[in-house]
View (cartoon, rainbow, N blue to C red):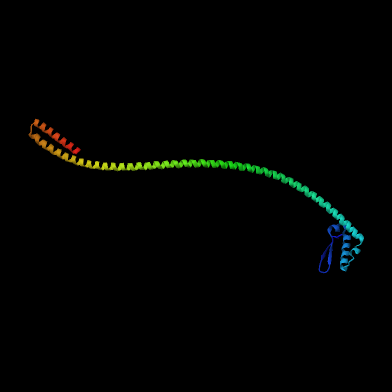
Length: 229
């Protein structure tokens, strides 16, 4: 049977170190005596260590070691039971936590389902917006066509304005000519009036009336001829 005794080697000699459990079971004095005996045996380098210790002491050591092992086994069993209880407690807590986590994941899945539904709604809204934009594009195409038509109408109007301006210029030229002719007619009429006055002095009343009528028709025909030529 092995004795659980450690030997710490220094430069001069080894030092015997007893386990704490053995020191506790032997007591302080017995532990010191055992250490002294072991150190003495080590100093003398005797091969009869077990004879010096004695059969009684070895038996005590064996009993103590057996008791120590039993105590260690009991402590280990107790420790194992405590560990099992703790592990069971922690596993139960972990199971509860995992159940909570599963519930949270279910809630998260529901939230994601709602998010997917919202995204589907958003996609539908975007499709509607795309359709509206297509309609707007068509409207803009129609507006462009209308603007092209308006531009063509404006071009036609510009041409008509040019024609009107040309007509106005011709009319203004004619008005200038007419004014000139009117001036000449007035001058002619003034001369004729002067001549008529002179004739009026000379001719009789009947002759005066006939000459005035002839002069009036002559002037009228002259004016008509000026306006229509």
